[in-house]
Image 1 (cartoon, helix red, strand yellow):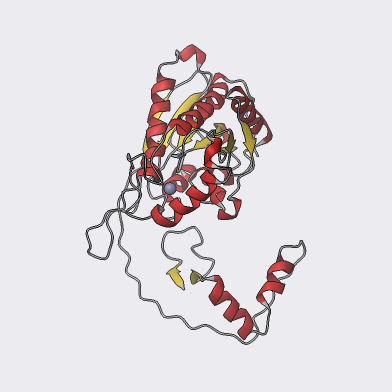
Image 2: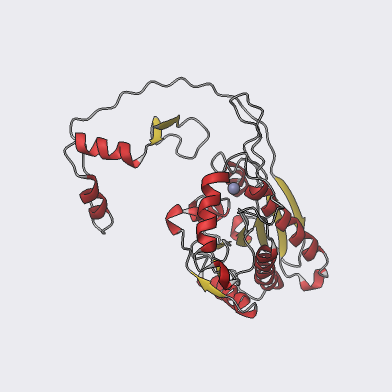
Length: 316
Ligand SMILES: [Zn+2]
């Protein structure tokens, strides 16, 4: 069971005195103790109209000692100005977890999560800076938020106090977080729908690369709700969050190669010190960035149309 005080800067502050997560195994025990069957309730809860049930006389007592340490950190922003007041925002969080707290000296390197995303953002900043201003109807904001890993705090701060343009003039947010390191793919996936217009432009851009858009095969991870674009989406700004493709162009690797390797990578490297650049081609998660280049080019082509002013501003 993990518990944290709601006074942690997280947005649920004020709703509950404590909030927590526990494993399915523990949930089953709690349901059983309340005389409920976990599987029956879970399946009933997936249908519209399900009403929450009381856990009867079950009570929890929790004691919690907390120490609050204020931390000063910074969002990093760069704006390339266009002709109108509207802006397109790119986001890629720069923070990770620093050093392990167990005194081992191990470092959360965060190479893929999210130095790779920041590198993509910088490459796009260079590309957009080389476009003459008269071709940029809209400005482009490159926002590198802090404290994403602590609950999307940097992007939340920006969305509440946008310092470049009002949220109402922000026409799209395009986010990078954990890009593809497994080579070129025949398909591409996005986390969640953005909005009809941007999704259609993304599908066109994929088609020009002879790739198809597939649904996210790991949708149950709920990534759409777990990265910085989500704060923009909550304000009604269409948010495009590219995931990656899952069918390698190398058919000899098998249809399930990338999905399985991604799951293995998650288990071994995600939010661990093993999240490092791997240059050994024989290693299971050797960094083959050829597919990542395709993905970033695809996003560039989508953003190019948005920045050129092709699509009218549209809110979710
Ligand atoms: Zn991340």
